[in-house]
Image: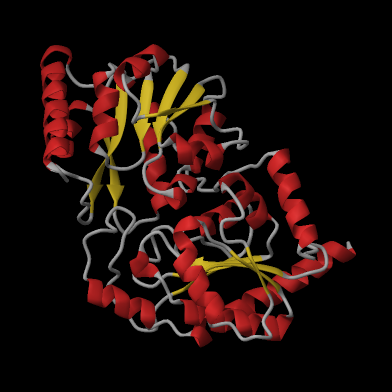
Length: 389
């Protein structure tokens, strides 16, 4: 962090301390809630895994207006058409504290430890600000300023090593909302649906006839990357064994990994390269139409989970208990031997790099293909029943 940023944070903390001296803590629960601000912290996958919080609010407080704050460039296209959000705003914009005040929200929830959003919500005078206090491990996001700020807001216990979507739901407990429903929720627009349908037609993909498999060979955190050659070998096997339609998924930041995978493909293996073809709204549609989605633990696999698409999650160094999709149609492929996970939802920055790489590299192509075979047998049976029915 540069010096100017440190100074900004210090000033922000001082403002919070001064406010606390005159106004006390933001721990007042209103008898009536008409507006609630939610800050889904983290990247794409984390935001998808926070949708159970939004769904629970909509279910238990159906008349409340839900405002999502944070990175609107991500939140708006990802959460649009889900029916869970009424408005978005960016916490990076100028005059944000004054804008927060204008909403006159009675409650604000932060789904992960984050100093600046929590401080801004507190300074805006929201009566109840709820933010997590991490237990069971180290989180680099729990900075010294954040720990001081916890004294001025209502905290809930977030335990590292537990199922993260359920831990996030604890943010609602101060409101008297107790939920264990961790189902993810997304939607998409007719415009995006129409564009993707045409893309499928242009590439001879028939979702009723073909076995459609998506593969994402990249991850936001490069330490989790399984390797283009391994993904290519996996695609070669799936095409040879099932003559499946394989879509390679990737955005602008995934170009290197996608190109590496394609370079190692058998010349007989046919794929559809969607690199930079879809924006987030269209990506949701494309994934929703797949029969199976395969990747390391990265954002798009949670989009698949939200739409009920079976998944194979190659976990590598992450703690497989915390967030990967769970259920009969979701397979988690872990390293072959007992090991200590290196990456956690609340700590993906401080880890043993050598050990993390070893854990990722220890997962063989054969282990992943074996998992795919078991799942594909179920998928083909289910798809055949649906078509014949």
